[in-house]
Length: 98
View (cartoon, rainbow, N blue to C red):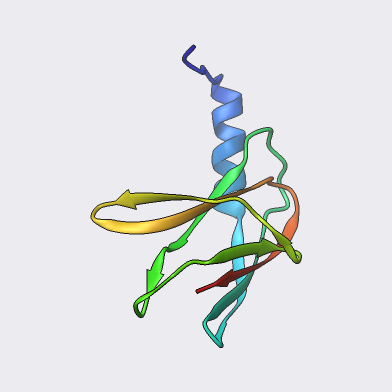
C-alpha cells in the first residue's frame, strides 16, 4: 500500500513543481486572487497552500475558474493552511474568500 515512484517519475514531479508560478496576486474585499500555472504535465497533482486564517477571518470558500473546490485544512509548523490540489500542465485562476 506504499506508493513507490521511479527516479524518472520523481524527477518529472519535481520539475513540474519547481516550474509552477504564481502571478497576478491581489487582495481586495477579503478575497485573495491569483493565477497559478505549470506548463509541465505530471500524473500527480500539485498542492497549493494558503493561510487558513487571515486578519481573524477563516477561509470560507476556494474557487478555481469560478467553480467551488474542496480543500483540506492542515497545521504546518503551528500555522493552519488550506490546501487545494491542481493538475499540473494547466493555468488556473483561484479566488480564496475569507
